[in-house]
Length: 104
Image (cartoon, rainbow, N blue to C red; front, side):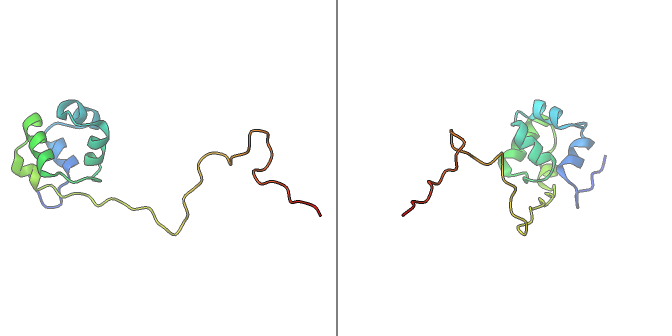
């Protein structure tokens, strides 16, 4: 099998070697589920240490792993503010957190 490396992602390379799911990659590689997810989707590149580990555990030649192109991660637009999480906080008694104004 002759692999094409230009524009090849790690996901494509792994599928050529019979690894079709992130779960299977996690079980065989020994890396964390989160790290495997990020590698699979191209958010993280394959560094030297990771390439060596994947080569040893998965049996994929090291030169193929080094040539994999990372997929650039999509960044969130900064034009919209982040959504607030949860409900607004109230004091334990249900009153507003600021004291009432003093009356003269």
